[in-house]
Image (cartoon, rainbow, N blue to C red; front, side, top):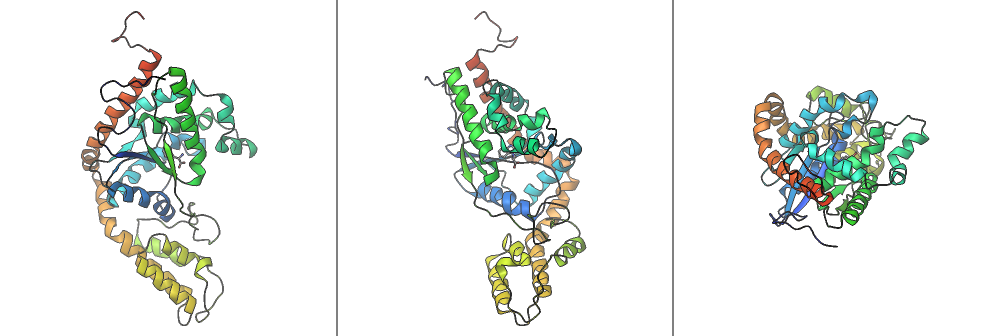
Length: 349
Ligand code: TRP
């Protein structure tokens, strides 16, 4: 196999010498502590680690796959971007981008679809689940793994940190890169490395199911009264004020552990175990304080960004420009490998 190296267009982050990390989040609702713990905090930490170039992408096209909620993707995009900024995602050398700003992703997705067997997509968990539960899946849902593979391959991502549930999608992305490279006879796409995040799922305020639904989540930002009400409503067991309590089965403690400072976590753990004079009401008050301490400081910045679209645009524009150059380069590499022409470059083959 030959490699398609043409003056700096080879796969990888050769220009910066840093590993390119890509993460994607769907804008499908108001962000809550489960999102913070599972996706936002890790991405922000990565953006501060030297040696990485982090592209955070709001995957609004992926947010369209549920027909009943198609308009939500556009609705939640802005607040998603504002949240990452307010919580301190470092833009220098990194980028926050919006998937639908990049038509190259759709073009690359089509090229990938044309080298991928139907059977591969038929084996995809999300699609199989939809069929099994009697849903009537759209072509969009079926195509979801191709679009996600394209997100990753169009930006030559080296590393994609995901939860366990997304592992199959990453394997598919590597498979599709392989099919394409083999057929094109050149190393057009770089195979991404999955990094599986070992974060356990965060329990919701019902103490049962994972946090993620409006009935069991705790938002990151919003009126203090609302957040307090949600925390006070966390389901706990019947142990009384002076009984020793088990932190490992206590939702208040689990939720605190997902974001608070070490000291606070240690403190609540000790108090629950000891029990005496420390009831669930006290624990909830401590959780309210911890929430205020961690997110209250950023609430003003968040509200500021919500009011300042021009400033957001100005901050995000350099990243968008760099990512556009990259997406164009990779997309051209794929087109060239197949010998596709445009009217501008038209010449007899
Ligand atoms: N499928 C991912 C999820 O549901 C979202 C996603 C889309 C993504 N494109 C991506 C994640 C690219 C990482 C990289 O969480």
